[in-house]
Figure 1 (cartoon, rainbow, N blue to C red):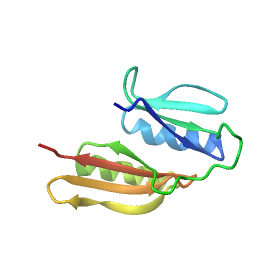
Figure 2 (tube, one colour; figure 1 turned 180 degrees about the vertical axis):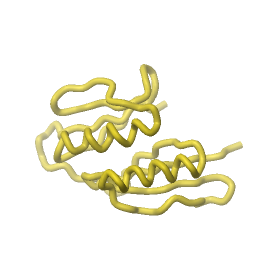
Figure 3 (cartoon, rainbow, N blue to C red; figure 1 turned 180 degrees about the horizontal axis):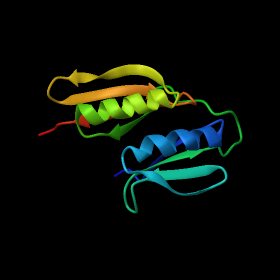
Length: 125
């Protein structure tokens, strides 16, 4: 249902270094792009995250209430992604843990530009 999500950056080189290392933990990589935008994913047809210098050339700022949720497999992988993001310079927005018992486990960080990320596992049905 989601093709890709775009978030802005102030510094493409720093953003690429952050996301290259973070998404390597999930088998993801930079798939394609050009100077002002880079697309990350696991392969053709899968959802992607794009990091870009805003098209209007105005200053980047994270949207209030906007968050990118990145699926993980269990608390171990959630914790690994959270720790990797913190190691890469992200800031804590909520340590790994169960949020809805038996249903939702997550961890929250802000990337180098202040964009909010959630690493999560959701059990439904």
